[in-house]
Image (cartoon, rainbow, N blue to C red; front, top):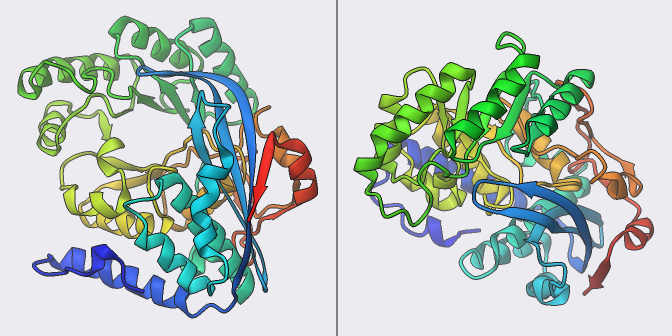
Length: 409
């Protein structure tokens, strides 16, 4: 299988050449898996949950769980199709997948890759993971092995706090302590220094630095998209904010501002011990592998639903390590099977931490459908026992009852 990005490999540096070789090895391995795609089913769950960010507020999100059937079994995965759009047309969202039906599994994967510029990235990523789950079940081996991830390292889930209200931050921090989830805590920051300091100090009063690695995600709040302030002029002030937040107890900051690659490198030179985490510059994986550069940050976020492909994400992870940075796996508020998938990938990639974990109260509907999982994110490090595929077995009759609506092709 050859994708558009693999057609032109002229003038690649040796590191990128190794990445492309690895991608070809994965794709060749998958092209040989037997089985023909018989049907695709998608289940939509409208999850009501308010989440506030510096650049937006979510009041609900549209969670999709896909089931792909071949003559050899069923593969599952999940994506977030939209936010604040409960009226989403599920059939329109799912309809591109009709092209997969009747094709061998390897050809179905190739079809997905051929449409990376025209189909929505979350849809492609979800369907690729479902096909990988199915391929692993067909071969009787973990999907991680099909991705070339043949070893597990301990990986912890992140307790995420999405609030600018000190009392809510305090309550969530106490809950993390009670549940033994304080190794890594992530707070949403808002691009307002006073508000952000209140959030950081509230967490630190409960969780000292020797207990908790504290991550802040500003969603580019200190220089938003479309800012009329030139990047070069904005950098000193952004760096000054970062130093203040670090002194207050922040260990790492994700996407502090909308910056070019050069801007990231310049900011890193000015922020000292604070670890910088690029996220947006790594979207999507198959493109960012060409643009990321050494010195952009300390830890790079491979972000579910924005990676566009778990295969390309694995290859991007290799490139990140070549450039001297570490890896984290983010989240897109996943509540079901893809959280488990990304936990397994995070462990296989030796990630520093993984945010994609099942959610209190929000994942209840999903757990009622689970027959079997290969992961348990209720403890840290996350318990992982690899099974064929991604070890996902769901009761689709129950899933149909739990979800808002469904479609089948």
